[in-house]
Image (cartoon, rainbow, N blue to C red; front, side):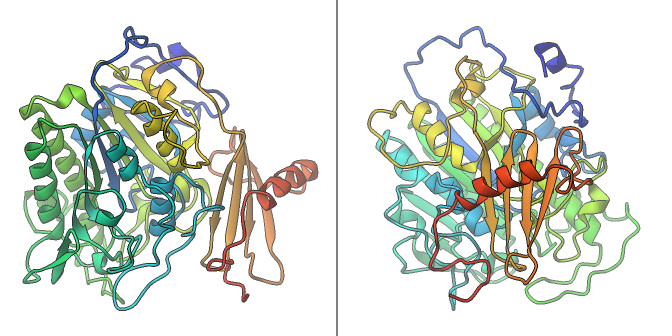
Length: 477
């Protein structure tokens, strides 16, 4: 994709990304006028992480059903990444990859491992986190929303690993209800009456954090739980936008997930609610006079879910990507990523640079000018040059993913080629080979046509992981 391709032909408000516009075989860098200027003050950073928001669930990435005007505004003022990947295709390993800078071949947490009565297996606390990185640069740090990386008392709660404060769910299983009986403030359980909408409570605390720290340098990890199931929310004006819009069947409820009379309406409204929250945050930053000195990043932890009555096929109006949450097709791990930092990131710009969650550690290390002092091991590559429009962006040789449910999966992407190993814990594991240019939807398995490419990527796959005592694709030790 050349610079001409990145004109407002591709980035009006309401961007539609076609397979041509995705520019799979090239990397784009726009050059800001002030890209060589040294800034005396480091920016505040807000990393807004949605839960199970798919690549095509917002208008910026081609959705034609759900209204997300504030995200369109964000894109018009920042940079849209077309090839950004989450850490995994489910919550815990994806978030572990994000906060430690390691991909799932090296993280301790490579799947969702539940701990009773509350919480998940803790990540390796010998690993320093993104929060610790920002603390070492003098930032005030806070997390809001869902944690899922260390059960109560594990030594891996947010305030154990670099966050000054936390408000939200410790346990991702508990977060399946938006009307909980408790949330955590730091390590303390705050009891609720089960009638208050948790996302509103969490969002209120996040806005308060911005206001209270307007005179400080801060890092906010806003890990909101929308639009994860259950599909439920207040029946307010946002919900009423969609209440009678779709032909749909009632979802009766199952397991942790509550019934939904109109699941399509609920899901669409939850995405618009995310958009509203994003707008509130931008407005609060503006109100406090700190918008121009804040790097705001918006993304999701994995592909769209099918739980609680959710219907991702219905909302994937452009049918860009194949696969959902838990798959290692593009739809399971390629996620939206929008970054805005006024005066530093070129407005209405697009990048096809290939990046992933484990790149955030080196990117923020470079942002906070700690390359010489921060010695955390990482699988990532800083993409700050791309964000700031500078030359010298390094590229990944390949990306690696693994997944440990449903008999196990692995995936390697190298250039436009993708190799997926399916059903690892079975008598007949299979290998699928795709070329994303031109087959972005991964419809044509080329494994029989290109055996040498299969072998090349298989060797990369086999050499990209260390053994795990916990996660072994469901195989017995």
